[in-house]
Amino acid sequence: MPTYDYKKGLTAMLGCFLIWGFQPLYWYLCGDMDTFFMMANRIVWAAVCCVMILWVQGKLPQLWAAFRDKQVMKREVPAAVFLFGDWIVYLWAVKNGRVLECSLGYYIQPLVVFAFGAVVFHEKISWRHFVVIAIVAVGIVLSAGGFGGVPYVTIALALMFAIYAAIKKSLTIDSIVSTTMEIIMMVPVAIVYVLLFRMGDNGMAGVTAVRQLLLMGSGIVTAVPMLFYAVGVRHLPLMTTGICQYLSPTLGILCGMIMGESLSGEKLISFCFIWVGVILYTLNSFYEEKKRKKLGEVE
Image (cartoon, rainbow, N blue to C red):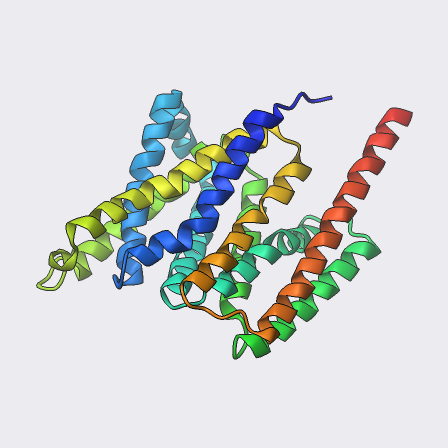
């Protein structure tokens, strides 16, 4: 039986999801800067922070070794592409008043990842899982009325993360090393964008000192939650980690309302279907974990 440190694990995990949950407000404070410029800064400063974390942890040799491993690179390159897509859609949605759609996407991400695992990796799926997926699907269909059309942001975030998670599933290297590799691979794209589109007459001159500090800080609010998550997941059961992750989209709803988005009746109904699906999925996970433990004791 593994030994867990709940105090250390929960502190780290809550720190992670609190930062992720309130991130929309951070990007909101950056003002009316264009999404791609914010994205470029996030990539560059996150790369700097992640490399510093690995340096402190003494893991830089692992990073260089991973870059030289062709099998690792075959998985990390597409992982970087989908992580880039997830980040850019999220930032665009926050800047365009669609934080609630993001929250809906993050609520269903674990369920989409599970469904993706069943299709791609042929993982076992029971009738209870089909019920949960059906309930969530109804919620997504109903959300079209509340959001004024197909919730493309919700679907895009959920699908991109599901593919990203599927790629990461096959990697055995350290999680922070892996994510640092992906961010470093994005850096050339960020630099090219800044050089081509932000170095002219209306480029960097429009960025105030305060906003530049916020952009630099985006590296911290990106890297620190990753570190917290890596610590938390080592000291907590996966079930506890799974429950904690729903804190982030819940706070996202609060952030969306603070930023002026309305939680209309139609949106609330769609969220209720999602919440019911999430609760049933969590309860079923508890049931299956308990059943596995009983089988282990019998054996």
